[in-house]
Amino acid sequence: MMIRKDNEGKMTLYVAKKDQEDEISSIEFESADKWGGLIEMTDGTKYFIEPLDAMPKLPITLRARRG
Image (cartoon, rainbow, N blue to C red; front, top):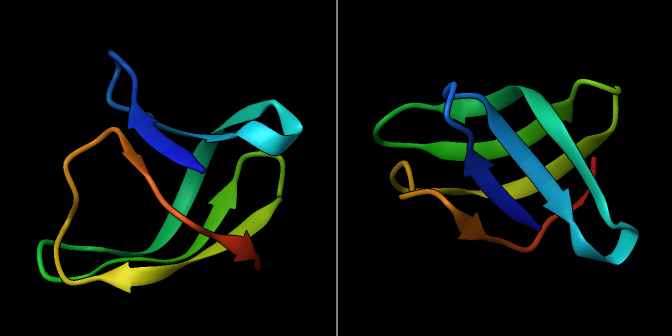
């Protein structure tokens, strides 16, 4: 999955296998010292990304599983 920020500062998630892109509505951990966890899309789909020790520089490609 690829996570990136658009010009308005909204984060989007792109799933290549499904050719699906949607806006992220919430991220479980979104601080300077912990980022990731359960991610929810605006359509209600949930994914889990192992939390990182710091907020990454976007865009970033990560492995995720359905939440």
